[in-house]
Image 1: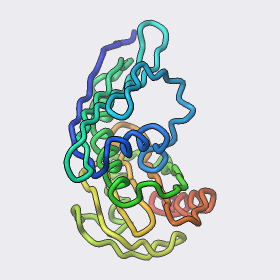
Image 2: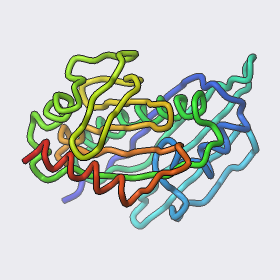
Image 3: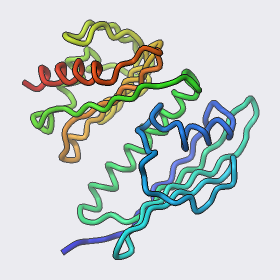
Image 4: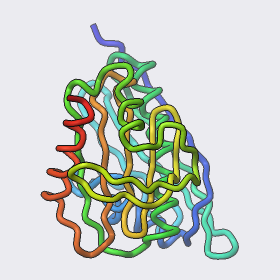
Length: 230
């Protein structure tokens, strides 16, 4: 049996960019701060540029997934975002809701980091998943230790040499029990403790250096994660 139940995740935040720039980031610019969404089979049910956007996907038996962005201009080229993610979860409602709501906080924080530091710069996006061994209860803690940021907080400096990856030098821009963000001069590194929800630990790299190579990045970081969980 399935337990289909509706959900709604609401998040309000202020972003360091105009509504026009935020609109660009949440439509065509998602690889720069989240992941590519250009292949999503969604329908823009509301498109009131640059203040109101609703994207919706529908499926059988009443299933749907919907993202709403309401943008309000503020002084100093800033914008207020009212974000609503709604839809239907099938099975494991509590776990899925917890995971989705926590991911929302991290993604929208990363959106703000992108707009503040890299807005408009070309990006090379890479997604790397850890091995099955990373799904253990201590999986994310092992990664934080390997990165040398076990007790780091937001604003803490990072300067570490990683085997097979090279030097990682920047600062922690996000840190909690399940997520870690490190921003350098030319990139954002996002680490996801999805072991908390029964999945492997994962990471994304958003490279704004102008010389990014997704294949090489995936190989280097994949090798590093393999060592962490060997």
